Amino acid sequence: MPVLQGPRGSLNVVTLGSGPPLLLLHGLFVGSAAQWYFTSAPALATRYRVIMMDLPSHGRSERRADGYDLGSLVADVRAVVEGLELEGVRLAGHSYGGLVSLAYATRYPIQQLALVDVPLPGQTQDAALSSADALLDAIPGPVREALDKGGRRARRLLESVGYLATQTSLLADMEAETAPDASKVQCPTLLVYGSKSGCLDSEAVLRASLAQVQSVMLDGGHFLPAEAPEALTRALAEFFIDG
Amino acid sequence: MTTLEALAELLQDVLADDWDPSTVVQMDTSFADDLELESIEFVVLAERIQERFGADIDFVTWISGMDLDGIIGLTVGEVVGFIDAERARAS
Image (cartoon, rainbow over all chains, first blue to last red; front, side, top):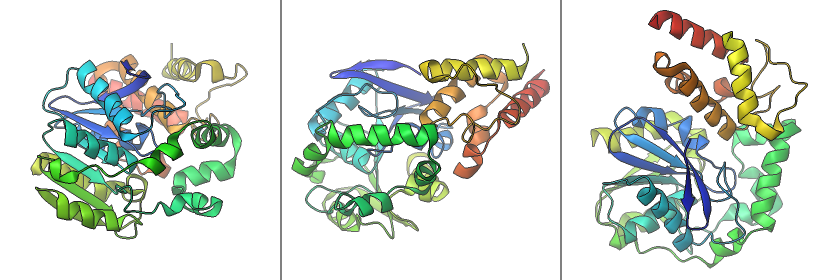
C-alpha cells in the first residue's frame, strides 16, 4: 500500500490489477478506498490497473484542517497521477469523490469519466446535512450497524466524522463550492444514479451539459457502492471494459 | 509457522499501536465482532496477506464474491482455510 506525498500531506493509495490506469475516488465522511476495494475494483482490475486513493483525512491518508475545496482536492488527485506517472487516466468517483473527478476532467485530459450519484453544488440540496436525524438516516446500512454495536469501530468512526465536521473546513468548503463547468469535459462520461437518490436533479443537469454522455439508473439511493454493489459494478464494467 | 500464527502476526502489524497485547487470535475469532477491524484496515490486511502468501492465492477475488455482510462476518479460520486450500492446490 504505497503512501504518496501530496501537496498538503501524505496520501494513501491502494492498487489492484494491471493495465491502463483507472483511478477511483470515494465519497466523504464515511468513505475510504475500502468502498471500492471490496465492491467494483476486483472486476475492473481484470482489465485495468485500478488505483484507489484515500482522500485527505479519510482512511489512512494524512489529516488536515483545511483544503477541501475542489481545487485543493483536484491537486491531491493530480499528485497521485504524477506521483505514479499515470498516462491515459480514466476516472470514476462516488458522491463528492465524483465531483472531484468531474472537476479534474474539466482541467486535465482523461480518457473516460464515470460519475456515481454526484450532487452538484447549488443544484442538489444536501438534505443529509440539514439535521442530526437526517445525517443519521443518510448513513449507509453497514456503517450504521457498526455504530449501533458500539466498540472500537464505532468509536473510531465517530471520532473521524466528528473531526471532519467540527475540526476542519470541510463543511464550509462544500457549502462555498460552485459546480464545475461540465461542458468542458471532453471525454465519454457515464452517469450512474440511484432511482431513490436525492441527487437526481444533478443527474438531469449533467446529462444536459456533458458532450458525450450515457446514463444508467439503478435501484437504490445515494450510497450505491453499499446498496447496489453488483449492479454498480456491472454498469462500470460495461462502460470501462465493454464500452 | 502455521497459517494461523502468520495471520495473527499480520493482524498485529496492521493494527500497530491499536493492537491489544492480550488478544488471542483463534480460528473462531471474527474480524468484525472480535477484532473490530475497520474496512480500510481489512484492505491493508488483504494486501499483507497477498504479499505474504504470494501468487498462490487471490484473496481479493475470493472476498469480492461475497456480499458485504459475508466479508464483515468472516472468521480468522475461514481465511486460514482459504489460504491453506489455495496453497495446497498450487503446490
